[in-house]
Image (cartoon, rainbow, N blue to C red; front, side):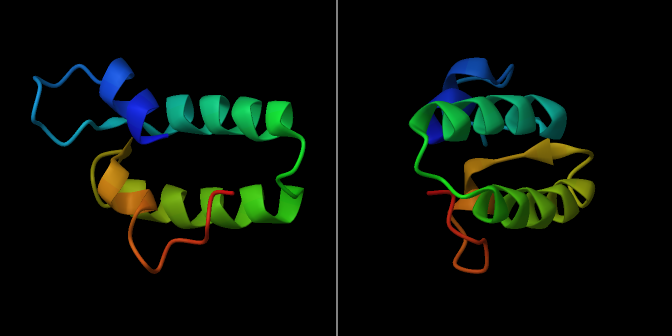
Length: 75
């Protein structure tokens, strides 16, 4: 997901790689479903946490959010 953020972000290289929460949610759900080994509960827990975090940053998700120790694991 870090690479996804870095590819999709509109920020310059070296920035926070922020992307809109809605975009993160769509891509993450797609990839988790394609993987087939990520439980729905894990996806929902991570997204719930990230949605709350994104509210603190104008609706944007950054790698620092999902790499934080408090974030439920994405996989």
